[in-house]
Image 1 (cartoon, one colour):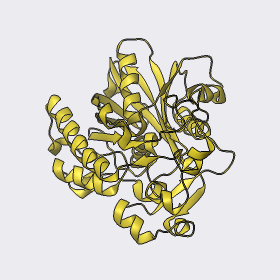
Image 2 (spheres, rainbow, N blue to C red):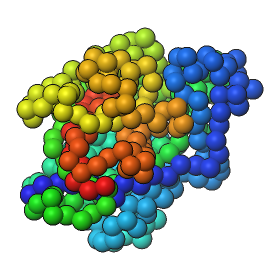
Image 3 (spheres, rainbow, N blue to C red):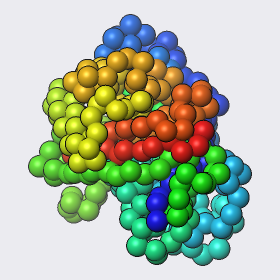
Image 4 (cartoon, one colour):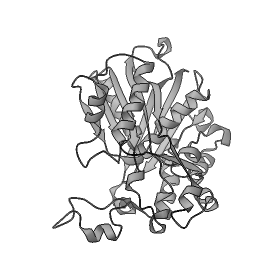
Length: 338
């Protein structure tokens, strides 16, 4: 039995927000943002669109490409509609699916890769044959839109991406659209660095109340990041895990046709690619247009790559991610159908 991820789809809000737009509400500039991140624009939702709405729109695209029963849902996000439940059940309901299980993955920027590994494992043991995997985020409603919060606020966009992971006997004979055979993956975490990239409040670790007016006024309810440490760890860990995964499968960077990394910072991706020995034309970036959509960046990237004709049968695709936790990982894929 082989696992293939196919029928990639994405959902992006219609409201485009440029760096110039942000410069009107905080002390920043297009030059400052582009130089430090590579981001030129991002897309933000308008009320009442939620994370599960974007996830559902992307999922419908995948199901339209490949109609058929879905036996389970794996939904990755750090920005669910509510504190609980997660978005998986909302996606199930909005799609009108029967009461299939819905798993929620909270691995932030690595969420989609964690979801792919879960789906692959569940398919391989014969538990489910056809699983919907979706990564979705609405960051824009949870950012500090002031000069105080600019280092974080300029980074993030809203969006969703999805695919179907299905078990097949021989991937070479399959006719699913936009199909990638899952060769393997490698995932890691190190909770010693939780406070370097987190949103601390509200949370059950705080007593006697999880949230107060003072915490809101101090900006403690917004994401915080130690940018230098995250940058250094991201470059190191994404490079390490990519090389380890390639070696484990008897491959090297020379065998990679396209590198589709998580989209946190264009400089991070460039440095990782350089350390892997990849050329610029072997790296697929979307951060310039969409910003960091966390769990959605990799499925959005793969969807865009298929639509642009960059993925052809037989090619090897490498994806890697790093994010809050710290968590990091890589996945190897092989194109079996464009």
